[in-house]
Amino acid sequence: MRALCYHGKKDIRCDTVPDPKIEDGRDAIIKVTSCAICGSDLHLFDGFMPGMKEGDIVGHEFMGEVVEVGADNKKLKVGDRVVVPFTICCGECDQCRRGNFSVCERSNRNKDVADKVFGHTTAGLFGYTHLTGGYPGGQAEYVRVPFADVTPVKVPDGLTDEQVLFLGDIFPTGWQAVVQCDIQPTDTVAIWGAGPVGQFAVRSALLLGAQQVICIDHVPERLAMARAGGAITIDFDNESVLERLAELTQGKGPEKCIDAVGMEAHATRTIDSVYDRAKQALMLESDRAHVLREMIYVCRPAGTLSIPGVYGGLIDKVPFGALMNKGLTLRTGQTHVNRWTDDLLRRIQEGQIDPSFVITHTVGLEQGPQMYTTFRDKQDGCIKVVLKP
Image 1 (cartoon, rainbow, N blue to C red):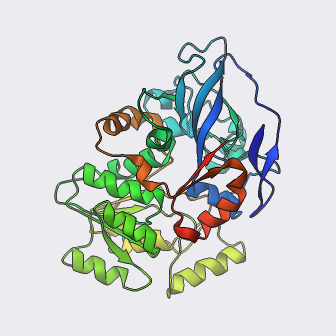
Image 2: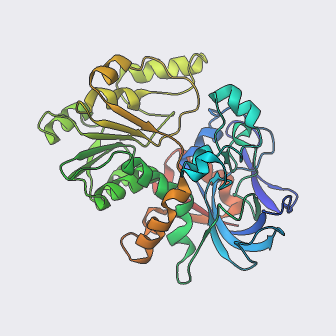
């Protein structure tokens, strides 16, 4: 089969690799009909995530048709259409029973390594480093899905791939980021980053009743899409984020702040941006924490910071004293996708939201390598890429 494979920093290739096979009775093999490039994939592409190996199949946003099931899988049958969440969960461990699917205690087959790096294991993830199990990803023609009697989401008739594909990651990620904020009707929610997750956070915050949503970025197409979703926007290249937030909140600051950027935060004309890039170049820190610092500074006391943006290692010069003394609540984590999918699927069916709004580019799998660059560099108005194997 054909698949997009990692061959080092800024080197993704469309290779011919062996077809996946059933390895366990709970497995299923999925013929991929649609997959996508995620902002988190760019962290691999740019070389910021440890644990990648030559030839690893990448990608964790995918869906398709079941073509084979293991003997013990009673949930799926050949021909079912499914979306596959990026977090692999067993459904049986203590964390899964609590709904904390992204920290499943059994699905990471490199648990011993994860224990040493993080203190305790996280769940296994598709196509996302050997720290999370080294599972082949979904930017491919076929994928083996472990624990396929738990993880996949069946797609009802009448819905297109484009409407449901993002149930596997970015829609529930934006949703969880907002749910973690415990939105109140008087809240102002400020969202840093108008990429795909930020776009879904904008719409989720409004669906959940926020009074005002503000989105911060500097890419014109992204800002326009956020405004179309109901947000007030701040272009940090052309105006002061601090001054505009103070103006929009009568000097109080937003009650809820969401970091939908993560480790590769960009900023202009700021000392800490230069500092972070220098520290990264010298390998003295792995992640750029500009957005996190800014959120701590501007958030209203007793407010909440929610962080869906991916961080991979170490950050420096975080004003933890301000976070503590302002009484801020910090909520983080990979997404517990299966906790949210039933509700979000219902909202799609009822017409409350059509997630396909975020798609700007649809191409064949073979064009995937060049689209990584287009997406990363925000060329051609690119906000979200869907690949068709």
